[in-house]
Image (cartoon, rainbow, N blue to C red; front, side):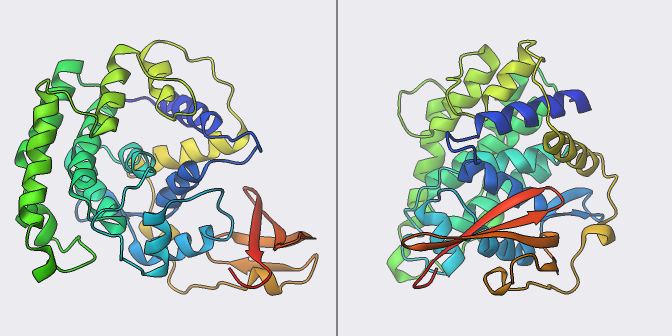
Amino acid sequence: MMKEEELKQIISRGFKRGKMDSGFWSYEVELFLVVLKSMVPDRESGTNKVDYVRFQKELELWRDYRHGGNRAVMDAIKGDYESYWKAEDESIAFRVLAIALANESVEGIVEESLKNTAYFTGNSEQIVQSSYMGAFLGHLFNSESPDRIKEFSREAVVKLSLKEDILDAKLLKLELNESRTRYVVEFERSRIELLGKLSGNSTEKYPYVDTLHGLLEGEVDEEETIFEAFTAIKHGKDDADTDRFSEIMARYIWKLRKGWIDPEQIEIKEYIEPDIFSMELGEKSYHSLLNRIELISVEMQDSFEIRHIGTKTGVYRFFKRKNGR
């Protein structure tokens, strides 16, 4: 089983890999954190699940401090699902990673990975791939052998059912109406294609499968990928310096993973969300998603108003266009 020190190294290395030249985290790492902040322990199942009321609110807040994004995520925030069936979402790996780190139950990880993927896209390739990713990371963090990791993860795809796991669970944001009559066929084709890739068929589809398999062999491209963190752990590179934020996040994730957090401690019963762009310089307030906040500076650029908000965990850089967000 994964040790707490290993988790700390994963978080520290992953955050460093997720830093852009500007010094800010990439949007994928930001969404990794959004998923973690939205997770609440479910005592009935013994897993940590995303609270989707909070998740949507966190996404709406993230929109104003983000450093990048993609169409699938931005459309979901707006409630615009025009691109839903074909949308590709590059942040899928980071969100599944957050779910896998916070849970020991592989079945729970796969279930939450499917749900979180379908929140942004109905693309059958991405949904099917997320089931494999969730199972793979779950078994990896539970310290299974490489052969068993691949075997058990493949089994998750074999058992994946569109009707039982997706439709009956009401994961899709849109109905399968007359215009989507071929979706059942598309989904099954994607599942068979992925199984074919796992059996050795050559295809550029499902790229994260190649990345995950590279983890086991130490063959991951180390440029700007959070997966490099896993390679470091698996191959003994445990010398990453940890900063205070990494240590705080690692400890919090570890407590989630071990079931040591009382859901009542993190449940938000009433949302208090002051308008950050209406605050006066130096004003202090309380925000349900950020805790205690203070407006520490305001900067006006040609097209943007930028506000720096101090919080317990650091400074957020919020921005909006002068003619609207």
